[in-house]
Length: 187
Image (cartoon, rainbow, N blue to C red; front, side, top):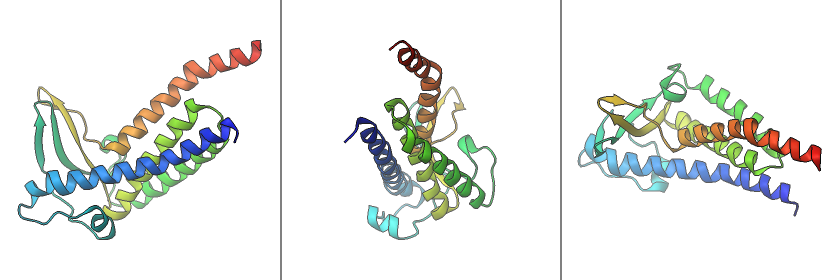
């Protein structure tokens, strides 16, 4: 198998891995960290039951983990960092799917690790959040970092993958791509 095909297969595999990791972390945090605070005495669901049924949509609750970090339930009806809040999740679902298709085509054509991995991260993160929008009408965010009363907007694993993937793609475009072009010209 050609090296470029391996990169693409790993990139596409990463999409599924990130969706699974994202949903598992959301299940665990919502069911075992936040649900006992939001609904004391409520039965926590197992992962299969959580996926196959409609779990309780928790209210905004918070659990202090460290002096600078909380697990805080936030239902994000907008895009990253709660921008463009909307009551209807369908436009955001459609937009995320269209962007994922665009990046999927790019991933199918790439031959570099510096693009395959970040593209897989972005698509996996976007689709992980699409799953939430389809199930809950909003994205479950819960990682809450803060210092001196200032809170960074709550986020989740999918958001982290999208942000890091975009940062890696920018780094690739600014730093690595020019180096690849220089090497190809001089070789």
